Image (cartoon, rainbow, N blue to C red; front, side, top):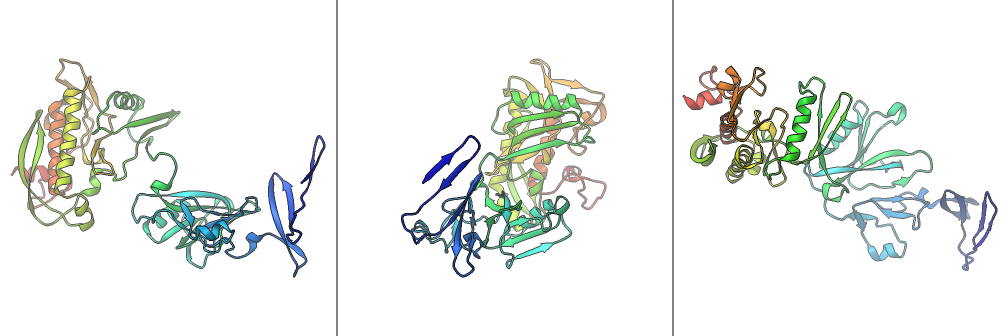
Length: 409
């Protein structure tokens, strides 16, 4: 290779020892190799050949070699790949899961894949397009149908991605479905408070300070927070199984012996329960329910007795109990929590906050709260976990009775 340079430019010439190899190179930030076509007497890039690199690859003229597997994929025929035969393309390193443990990897500036195995919807947004892809286990990628005016419409692909290449122009964004284990970085959950949430700056700071000081396996872990003008966000560890209210089911009577937390004691309790949805029923069998109830009890016991500070949560309910990958419960949302001194056992407030249906009677009517207030809320939660029904909105023979009233009578 010969190189001639001045202060402002470089001039490069390249000569192959094998004179049968013909090509043209253009040097401007990136290196592109073009091949001479004897039939057309013109230069062309190999990425213009349909599916030149095989399925699940991207072709980039600025790379060497020009064919590369998509992230999370490996060559289907490694021996052929090493000899620059890319026709078999690539396959996934691990099979794609049909679950919520997936995400999308964004590729920018792409010429989109062949659309022979795709479908489209002109009326939905990109966010709705992602949701549509997640609902279909055969969906492997999605993109905007129209990139004009900020993008609109939805285009989703099924099966292998064929003829994907890096665009020489602006290109489009493509979102390729991946298993969560194949995505780099840490998954997080962001709690963004709306202006109408009713939680002020004091409650927000209270939640941050409390969770930062508390460390227990049955309490959600706070990773960070953000306050900017009216925007307030909390960054938690990611809980893939959402919250407990996701699992509430109906039908089929079963007897169960569980353990219930009440006044710092674990006592035996026998009750009747219902379940219907077969998928969720398999996820939340009785051993898992016992584990969840015990985990919540341990978390509350830590807050009330074993931590450096005595904490009254004041809003124990299913949506505030998050569930991790192994169905272990984590108490969350400490915006309404109150700290007690070492000798303090109860307090009174003129501002009753929380969720009706889970409040103890003395708190709802007079504003008195204590450890017993959380114990009452926990008792309602136990009934819901066992019965598979929510306390609020439950109607049986007497429509005036909620779940708690029905069990009492």
